[in-house]
Length: 589
Image (cartoon, rainbow, N blue to C red; front, side, top):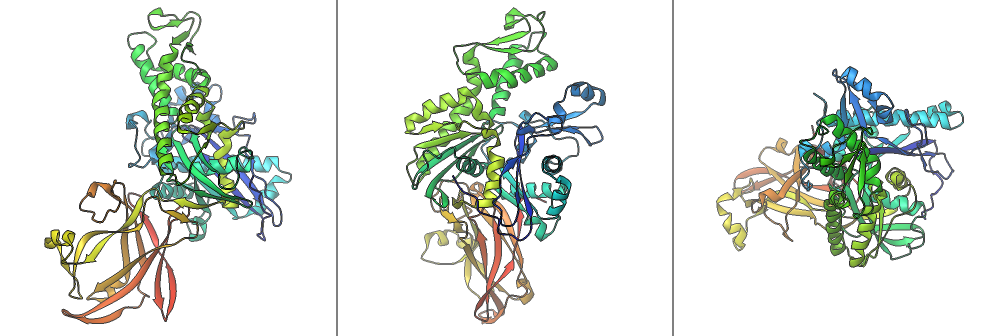
């Protein structure tokens, strides 16, 4: 178990972690008092849900005017159906999936499977409102639960840090939209200092830290042991593999690129609904209202309790008078063959097994232990089937007997406090598209002879060269920096006052991709790094074409953190200078 250290700061502060899930969301926090060991706690009371649960539904109701009428548990209170009907409210659920990267394998998920956002609302606005709602819930809970709660809250001032968790497959563009949502929610001001109070952690890493901090893996964790964490949630299955380098103090390293598949529990619902729509197509019970009631019953009862394909499952939706034997309805209940229900789960199970096998192939160490956590992990059929299947890989899968539905929020706070994970593995190859000096002896250069460009120095260069900065599978420490040097030339010195370069990621299968024009579909612009280089020295040169100017700068990337950071570096009077570089993500305004 990782032990927390006394807070070394001089002023009290608060850490809030928001786990916005596809179906349910949770909050954890820690109050940091100088010299005191912090304690991670959960928000367990919410408006409309005062019974001590750790999570609330990730749903909202919008009015026709675009205002939020109800959110979270308040959108599930008794009688809300009448309000929805009277006021013609629009339900928004699974909105998190609107953030999913286009490059992430959809595994058959269609846009039609996800309800559209309200008219004229963006995902940043919807996500942002929900963050503001969670913040109000956290404030209410802390002020009501702790002695002198109002004065305690006032003592935090602007010293509140936020940790936002996200699926393993989310990238920089998704993090940037989440940051914009936090700004929309007014969690922090839109300043550099405000932005630095927003932190990100993958759901896989947060789940691991929860297991460690709560002693759920104490009996098996020792120096050198590797473990795989399968976080099965509503929208995604996040798979991560780690090695415990040391247990005192806790030092953990990622040993395989984290994986993410869009086969969470909501996909089971989608398949169940499609089946019911087809079965009831010619029945009087095939209307939208009855189908919705059936799906609510399936979600609450049939799905979480299903464990044996040889047993029938029942979906209760009506009264004793409701009957249609032709489709299996009797006494207001629809009977389903257990093998049919197992079929709803099977694509998710298959996807997890494939992803686990891939992780094992990529891991640099043997992995014999697995932990299944997350809300979907509560399914006895999912757990039992995976446990039996993964045994063939030599993996012993366990399901920690605790409230693992709060794992991500708790682990997110632990991430902020401990930084136990000291190295991560690059999921993709990252680099820059640039020009390289022409070499007549290089066949690839000769093939591109018609594209050769003559620079101000008079030298010839070939475009579309891919200079790798970080290769897929590379282990990167939290404090490691990666550099890409730029030698810029221009006839007009003022053309060197600004630098703008694209960072591309390679999603193909080549081991050493060198040319972007060979597989243009496999290269994707991750972001653009922009910086003011007007203060960087320019060297006056005389070449075969006359006077020109050169400038040497390095783009410095910090890739070992949970989000990409960039700086500009150059040499001035023999010493390295640093300047800020702005990261602009493609497709994010």
